[in-house]
Amino acid sequence: MGVHVVGGVLIAVFQLIGRSQAERFIGVGGTEWYLELRLWVLAALSIWLIGATAMAGTRRFDARGVGTFGVMFALFVGYMIVTSLWAPDPIRAATKAYDLLFVVWSCVLMVVALRIGGVRATIDGFWGGLFAGALAIAAIGVAASVVGTLAGGRLSVLSGGPNVFGRNMGLLVLASLRLVFDARRVWRIIGMAAAPVAALLVLLSGSRGAMLALFFGVIVYLLVHRVDRRVLLSLLAVAILGAVAVATRFGELAVAVFRDRFLVGLLVEQYFTHRDVLALAGIRAGLQNPFGGLGLAGFADLMSRGDYPHNIFIEAFAEGGLPGLALLCLPFLRYVGRWRRGMGHGDSLTVAGLGLLAVSSSISGDLFDGRGVFLLLLMAVASQERAGAAGKSRVGSPTYDTR
Image (tube, rainbow, N blue to C red):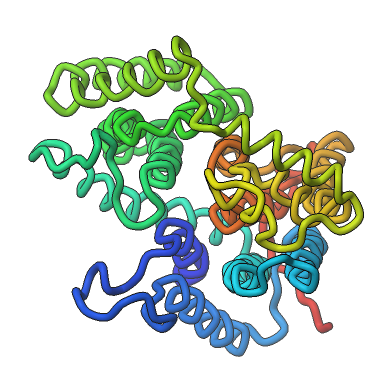
């Protein structure tokens, strides 16, 4: 596997850093485009893939037709950028189109990485890189909570705010569970220690969307992953360590935020942070403009409470009309269709991460924030295997493509 994991690692870094600027780390500069970390990461990935392609020659890995899905995502993003032509605010539309270029760029690189580096190596690189990177972010979060530097009672590291931080910590929980179920004792211990800490950090983010998404992601993982006696014992050990962590000052803070934000704010007071208002406004905008939508970033002209509906599907419908919604839904429907036709669900951890991000992106964030949904769907598709084929061939087995 070796160097082939590099592609997956860099894609994981891209997922984690979001819109973060280099000035947060070097202390100089501003918001200039050349200080965007996402630009550096995708540029590095592009250079690495060009070099890997040259070294591999005509050698390619079988990525289970993932290229077709990459084309579908490119068509969706391309269409949404075209809607800038009738957008009410060209400046806002151009800014959002710039964000979407990173989405389509990362999707193209993901397809190439799966074909050049191999499906298994790319997936392992992604989750390994995400675990290491998210663990570093988690360490900063724990330190901030312990020394009492929380702003407004909610924890956030890097850009994107508490909602993005909670989403990243949810992915860390899933990556930790993979280690919990590992056959090697050292990795099991690391996973058992990391999983409850990451879960408490989700609570400390105060993001109710991240909490719901984590619950859904864990349920999906346990459903698609084979659960045996060893898995149940490992989960029991994680629960015990989690109970111990709750008894610390760090755990008490997490429980307090969970109580205020989820139990009181959501369940008792039914405060949805105006998500219900934004969602209804987005649906109404799509119904009133079914053939082309409001145009890219057009939703921002409707509402004073937010620039987007905090739901990527409603956002596509509001700003792209029925064509935008159909183009976004098509790859997901095709993935489910392949699953029903006996292709299997794909890598269990990736499917769980896809479920987590799909729920999170239906509650918080815009299309760029939902980039992980596209990337993980590509990995899930590439790892699908027809029932009974797993014993005959390895996911990502090499083929030789002379096209």
